Length: 360
Image 1: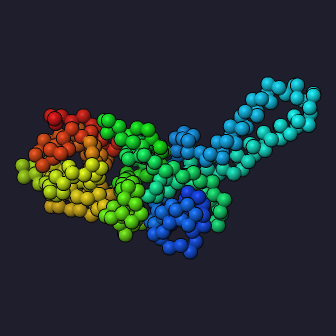
Image 2 (image 1 turned 120 degrees about the vertical axis):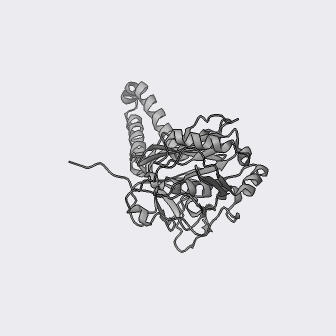
């Protein structure tokens, strides 16, 4: 009996040996650098995830769309006129049929990606590359489609289950939701790695706004998934009291206040009932600690991780925090004067909107 394929967890590679947009051979070019052919920027540490894309016809290459359209038109015309053509012009009918078959054979033989339900997705500063799940060593004729960010300025990672997530990239709607998506796919990712993927997406989109040499959003140290957490059992956080502690501590208040003058900001926050720490988005959540406030990718920490952006607070799922507990913490926290800037923001918990109580 054949076993179902288990897709791999997210991982980082040094960089692809070919350009993820045009396929140009990048051997001999050290990152960070730009493709000599199309100018796509590439760096050391490219995040690769495996998953299943939702129907995205516009992400199919223009040549393939043209061939598909031609084949459908020829097939329809042949169906309605085959009796006349076959008896009057048999050689024309034969050429007609061979053209249709040739188009179909070409489409099937040149698309490893479209013949499989699953693909690999590579994250770059300028967009996401859709790659075939399996590629032969040294292969140069790679069937890839590059999905540019275009006007996308927002994304959400929804929790489908403990080992699957859904990534939607698009524009920010009036209520903070993602609309006009340019990319939508489910991907294999356990809960302990979800924040790593989120951090990689944030860095990519921030770097895209700032350019290939743009300041603090670009970090020289690439994140890595090759750590003990990949082989360690999932740890459970100890229960914490639900009400906010009387001595609730807020660190990073000056940085938080400065965000009001930035039209398109992105910041990170770790928090629990004891306090909150707000800091720049180029710092990983797990790297910032305070007394009684510690986020860890493997749930050993006692705090939640969140991403702050204009009109929106995205809170990462934590197995020790049910929805009601998150609502209680965030509702009371936003009532504090230090968080006046964030009042009225839409709040999501692993991509799902939360209804807060008593926050105006």
